[in-house]
Amino acid sequence: MESLIFNVPSEISQSFFKYTDTDDGNGDAYDLEETEINYFYALLYIYREKLLDQTDNLLIEEEDGKYRFDETVKCEPVTFALKEFSEMWVDKDRKKCGVKDKKDCGDDDRNNCSVKDGKKCGVVTDGQYEDIRPFFNKLKEMSIVVNVLRKDKDMPITKIKMVESLSWGKMKKSEPYFTLNFTKEFRKLFMLPEQLFKKVDLKTVFTLRGKNQKLLYLLFKDYSRDEDNKRFYKGEKKFGITDFEKLFGYVPQKIKGISKNIQSKTELTIDCVTTGIGITTNYKFTIINNEKTKPTE
Image 1: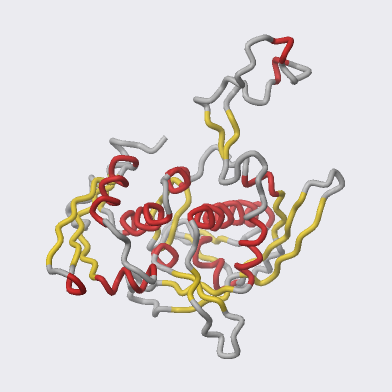
Image 2: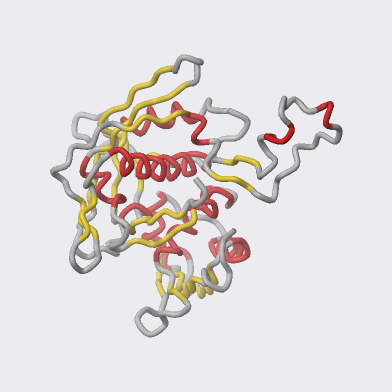
């Protein structure tokens, strides 16, 4: 998979997770860990690619060039090999394996060296899958509360069960795999290539350090203004303390410092002005997406 461009809908970038295994279905909120954010978006990306490959006529193109998700099409579960989460893209800058002498190389055919054209990278490194299986099992027991800040005015804040089915197994060569299907209500949120979506290079999300940087980057990206679209959208958004509490369950510390770190590592230019003190603090952001002039590698 050379490209990791994923259209993230506002409903998902403005969401949080809740357990649903209580009698009233109103369980505790779940605070995602840094690696779990990577696993979640990697899962959505790979699932979407595979589901479109294996399902005919799932997206129907309308006369105006937009697409419609056909809810009448039956979607079979998708099978994943765990190694797909460690081989999501190729880092072409990491071509050397570190072996100086050909005779010391473990590859039988040096010309077919696995890292000659770049190193395969992903959200899992060195085959360390111990954390990914428990997290996907947790997803089966959780719902996602979407559109928390109501950017999509046509949709209320909604709790959606995510996983319809999940099973684990091993292939003939003992390579672990799992089969998963999302619920229809959840998958239709991210299958379409447009609507209230922001085009995100997931490699940027994966390489940011700390869960607050990742989550705030997705939030800022959602409200960003493309540099060539000043006329229609100012790229300004005001957040209060309660907005962050709704999304994260807490107020991230040093928000202005985090926004500066995000700006230094991504395509976003972020200006932040604060007013008020304590619980009355407001953060006014002006966010510009410089993707054309400062592309993410």
